Amino acid sequence: MPPDPKTLHFVLGGIWALLSIPIHAILVFFGIVTPRKAPAKDLTGKVAIVTGSNCGIGRETAFHLGQMGATVVLACRNPERGEEAERGLVARLKKIPGQHNGHFVFMELDLSDLRSVMKFCECFVKRYGKLDILVNNAGIGHTLTKSATKQGFDLIFGVNYLGHFALTRNLLPLMCSRHQYTGCSQIAEGQARIVNLSSVMHHFGNTNWSECLIPQGPVSSTYCSSKLAMAMLTHAINLRVGDEEKRRGAERAGEKGAEMAGKCPGVRAISANPGAVHSNIWRFCPNLLMPVINFIMMLFFLTNHQGCTTSVACAVGEVPRDEDYLQPYFMPDSWRLPFEVCGPYVGYMGMKPRYPPDIDAEAKRLWKESEVAVRRALLETKSNN
Image (tube, rainbow, N blue to C red; front, top):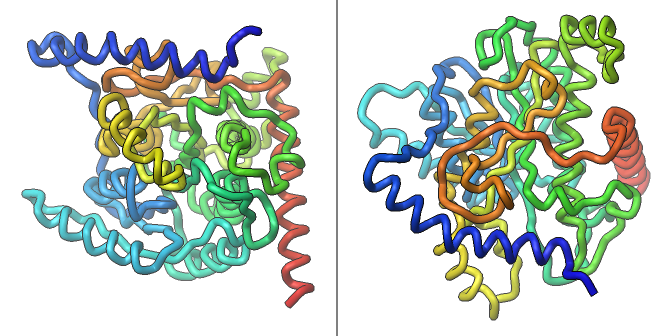
């Protein structure tokens, strides 16, 4: 019997890490290799949302955006942890020399409850009236039991994807109404970004979305499918808001995707694969395994500071304006490229995700089925109250 592709992928990734990390450390020590840093821009006056920003990659991403001058909304489920994160980030920013215009504000958001998502959107629009950067970061990697969202969807798929879809779908009109295309590939006055956190695990996801919505047991592929859905959401958004210039060029060339609406060319969506990161996403693993898992993560995984690099690059850096326009996907750089899993930290790079055939049609199907699921769930919730 041939080995399981997923298992083989990670075994080979581990072997690569054992070989490459020491070599890379020596090269960095002697100055032969310099890890690529996340880009920095002046975000004074910009408003950003980072979901799941009370810890891990999300917290580091929020800090970097605040350090650049943005007002960052910490969209978190737990008020106590969210407020602690707000205080901690404010104190951390004050310790950095120089003047910083960034602000951190906690707002409650429970992605496992679509009513909470709707309430958050309503409160955010009233409070700020604009949105420049949306980082869909929050996620669950594993559950110990069969678990569901408040509306009865699979908890992992509901939090990782469907809640983020509902959030993005409701805030997209606000982003479109405030931004016009500037012709610049970097975030500038008039351009907005949507960053969708994907993962190397998207390679192993499936597109049977109706099955993904049904609560699964603790051992399932729902996480993989949720990360594939996040990558495909990027494509779906860019199809809906792609710029008029690109649409006309595609029409002239007879390319797929020529039907892009061109409704909001100043908004771009990008997928980010942070790599294997020693973050809080592993908190639902069995307690007996955590010492072993923590030891492995300390040796081979990226820190949260390193892991946020791709998210920050997606939020403020240059993005493709060529054939990768619809499906930009940032991941850790080439030293980690063979397996996208483990290896030394070098920086980030652009790649193409592994999409199913006919991605335009599949992305539209994902969007439509997601809209139907959210609408139906909210109607049922309303009728039951």
